[in-house]
Length: 338
Ligand code: FES
Ligand SMILES: [Fe+2]
Image (cartoon, rainbow, N blue to C red; front, side, top):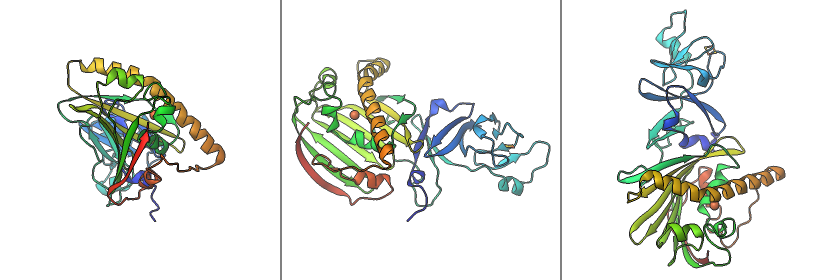
């Protein structure tokens, strides 16, 4: 068994690109504070601890070729190498010995990802699934800061359609007007997908106002932290939400969501405001549910989840989240009323 925290093995989204400018920023990812900065057009990520006297590097200033610690002025390049100790001569070997700990960093489509553990078997880049970032679509990010609860419970919440008739009654679906759907589950080695086929849009007000028709929605989890939900009609994509759930500490996480819509008549900014306005009450309900759930789990010391007839993903999300793999293929089909 690996002694490395599984949350440190995969890529985790740490920040929006637009939040990492000339001043360094600190983001805590799975318990580890990371200083993110840009220098010489390159993005750098270092564990937020100066190797000299452990001052937080994120409080430093960006210099031409690195980040300067504000305590004694040591300067570190984006790969962590110490490149200057003010008042002294520094040899190359000495500079390497005095390195700050670098963190692998990857930037794409307005997002900054980090990978804390540098074991050779983990992928060189995060799994990013189209249409996230694809040309020809409108995209916008929604970063809501830190939430109470766990990234795992948030991922399960997004993958689970059954709570939408109860918790989001009236908004997404209605508990008193359920309709027949077919759920199909497909395993991938490091992910799982749930497809919902239905002949009418959801009974909640959001679907009725926003969607003309709907035939299919798919939710795909790619371990450790990405969930993509896609809504489709006969004419193609209606909406895609790609979310990254970054664990912060034991009891908090940070969700980043990117919304993708086909280009149409409505300007992107109008769609952005409209979607946010409609989704805000749903997001609030999920946010308080996850916080309430986390409180109970904390009080009892550990989670203890029963699997009901609708929980067709069983403990597979948990297995993937913990770094495990699945046997690929379609595994379940369930007729249910949502
Ligand atoms: S603590 Fe950073 S330079 Fe001394
Ligand atoms: Fe929800």
